[in-house]
Amino acid sequence: MEFIKKNKFVCIAIAVFLVVILLLVQIKNTFFPNEEHAIYGNRLEGSDKVKISNSKKKTIESSITSDGIAKKATIRVSGRIIEVMITVEAETSVDVAKSLTDIITKRLTSEEKHFYDIQVFIIKEEKSSNFPIIGYKHHKKKNFSWTKNR
Image 1 (cartoon, rainbow, N blue to C red):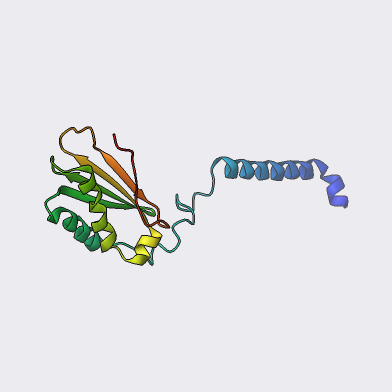
Image 2: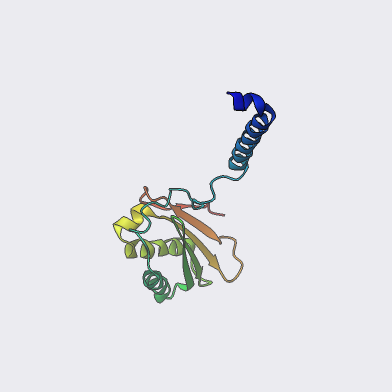
């Protein structure tokens, strides 16, 4: 106690310094959230168990283009979404283009279908009033939702 009475200005300075440090830490945490976590937070838990390999992506891409309807297909996995870009032939109808999603879902295991959402962009090389069309399948749904017919 005697030490505190003798050095009261030093003790007050230390207390103020500690309060300022605590406030700065709180401000930093408010404006710069925890940077150690991934962008997706914990939403990707289990993704290491249900990983889609590059060879599977190539197999699906070649299956889509093998029937002659699609010219080109590319697949990209982003978080929990499988993004598929398909370029179809000029004479392809909307219904035939939509049927290409069956190839994708047949090649995925049920575990993959229940983990990943699937987003499909179908375009033509030439301008068309009916294209592009976009389909989306939530991992808990069985069917794709499509953009409205134009």
